[in-house]
Image 1 (spheres, rainbow, N blue to C red):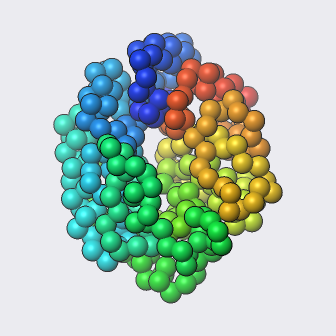
Image 2 (spheres, rainbow, N blue to C red):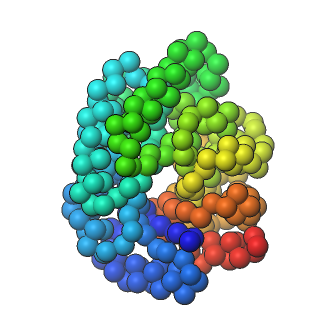
Length: 300
């Protein structure tokens, strides 16, 4: 069954119940299931608010964990503790699926942002000037330096450790936005990561344009792994040719002007029989679902 989820950031306003009812009704009328993905910035109050809606849930880990889940760090223990907390919440709430970012070219623990901690406080721990483009926080092409190849096997080994330790749960690795020190941005990176994957289409959009790659070829490359089980869908306002140092992430409504060829992306996803889409729009509404369904129907 086709499953559409909002990210929990979209439900922080007073119109939460109205948003949910409109989305749920629209999906049910079209034979789809509506749910929510609890965002990694959610505090306890937000988690319990979403739980009270009595909808199917997934997690964007680390939910309630203290650190980002960096499997490439020399010391694995902060990720282990953060995932342990995340898993406790998953089991408590009957959630069996979580997506996360797995590879950062850094060793010190990176505090999880949200729950009162500003993003920039965490980001300063993540940023490495020597891995970034000049006057930018976006990555230069460092993906073939020795350090990268030294860290990559750690990610694979530790992901296997998580999956062996928690066999009742599903962990999906997501392609990164190409911000300094994040290491899984291209199809050839994720094809080496075992197990199920999450494709973030706007992260791929940024990666393609910052690193001069054809966007649809990248989308097709991710899908060709045959292991993409979830898609993060949102729009980016950045256009081809925008200065590389100015790019940032998307998370905008699907209705904004964009050049991402989203109908082609949805057609490709449907051809690969992907049925789980998260509208990772900060303030998603039923209009985003309507736009998605129009693209989905045209992809038949």
